[in-house]
Length: 178
Image (cartoon, rainbow, N blue to C red; front, top):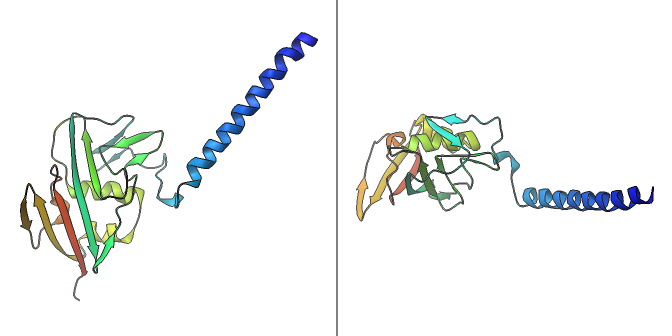
């Protein structure tokens, strides 16, 4: 009987410590998140606009495009973790932080568009500004800085803008006139 207690007591103590530590870890993870409604869940589709959510990041085709959005002369923050489902998968188009950098990490080289990124964003955050951009119901002035060449493209469908490496895409939104 003493041998059984001598073996079980340390085991129970170890399990109690592990449970306590895991509860702290879960608390720390969720206490750092301001708005849990912006976190995608397993209900998020794993294929959005041809972009899949894989367990690992791919580096066969890897680039970064900066997206800047101004709405009525106010900066729009591009949320962190668009396209990332923690501990589950990561979409080929995603953000890591609120810098506006879109990470393109694909298992093969192909062209990706701003429209595809906006579809992924919409699945993670149903902000009305995204819906407006996807429905093209805003007057948008677009400028693209690509390798020291600035392009201003009036009347372009922003959904078709290609996500080029090191490009800076600036969208200046204004309400359409009735």
